[in-house]
Length: 211
Image (cartoon, rainbow, N blue to C red; front, side, top):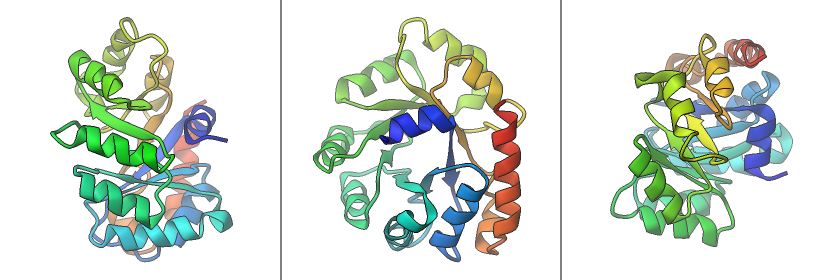
């Protein structure tokens, strides 16, 4: 099953931002146990390639699909691919966006470019983005996502930023392919302290809220 098909099925991916990760394999196992299989480890975490390699190399054990997020440069995209990333996500678009897309596609993995405005969505699609992350989604909420669906019918949109168990279902009802679960599920403190049971419980609660 492709990453986008899995997202369409699960309707959620987890975005991990933490100052440190005790064990990326155990983190992924905890999220999968709670029902979240697609996991984005971000370049805001120190030594991200090492953690990504650990998570990717054990994905057959955990059942996780692991990608790299907050990819801002082509060099980071290459590091992510070399570490075994199964998808790449950017926070937006910059001068190296085309090269980031090319790096992902050359590796045979999907790329999700970040956007906020209709013009940015158009640019992301023109660059070859497989889906488009709408960030920060909480600024204008589910109605804005629904409005984007008017000129962009069928475009897979993934709202990120401020999505929680209280509003996730509204974003899905507004047409989102899937939603990003951030600190509502994986708080930096829980990740750093290896509180895996807490993360599993929060993931379970989040998934239950999707209906």
